[in-house]
Image 1 (cartoon, rainbow, N blue to C red):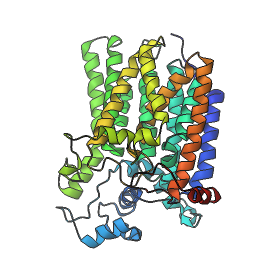
Image 2: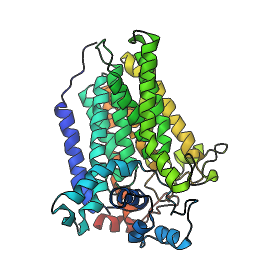
Image 3: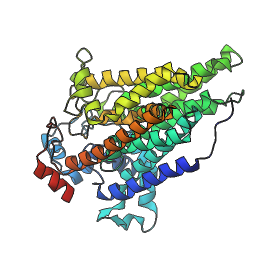
Length: 438
């Protein structure tokens, strides 16, 4: 196998330009910290500035949010006497380096963006950068799997602009989904890079330690993403079995992966112990997950944030995974496609098992935004097919889907459609006109 190209090339440069355009055009309109992002941010502020897990004082700054005010006024505390926080600590840890830097550099603390202190914008800026890493990672995945630069570029750009990933990378970048996408895509690239490497030598144990750590960190972003990262690192270990000189060497790799995973997950366990007095729990309560009653159909096609309803491009991406598994494409992608398809179905089951399967206030099926990289790979496969007419149709459909996604974002942002309830099949003409004016 010939080594895949290492330079970004024209496709990589185009992806960066698209990201920059989205960042410049949309992030400027973003509320720096909002929604669930508040609960991620107060953990960041508490850890970096207060060095504790007492969030009540940090939440006071966001009392204007009705959910925050209701929680503070309720007086509910945990078994350790602290204010509960149902959200994971992963985003706070990823944002922490840039946030700490923004507080310590002379003069930076006084800088404002649109009248907002720079510190409040750090989560959105950091998330946008992690999303860029994810986009370039997926571009690298496509090229390493032999899908070509053009198809890889199209798959990434269309997947970014035509799904709700764009919304959660810009307008609500203080939520966890953009980070989830970026880190999952980075892990997928690392796994594919190892799987397709033409070199016979084995990487050192620190590399496998790093893979395990990245898998654990992904679980810190959102717990359900462990069901994405764990299969990927096990696939990497399975791929390595032919290169390992002995079973003991393979065992050493497994131990390194496991150690890295434990290190990656450990911060959440420590936070839970300090906050709730328990090492393992479901902070939302036992009734949050109902595994015996999954809402498969609603999660996929409901007008209330159904994944396929709001993001029809997903259908093309999933079709691409099926094509990849049954086609004459290179062996690496034919091997990987069934695993990624299984990961998607597991996410459908998990999201359908949640008591609030529609995701509350959400732009589309927000819990699936984290695995947009898998959809992108499927799109790459479809764009790589040697059928000019089909490619032309796909480009036309993708263009329409992107325009529809941008329009839907505007309707959602300006309150012309419900954030929580099903979207009507038709939108009054006057609302369309108002949105175009805005």
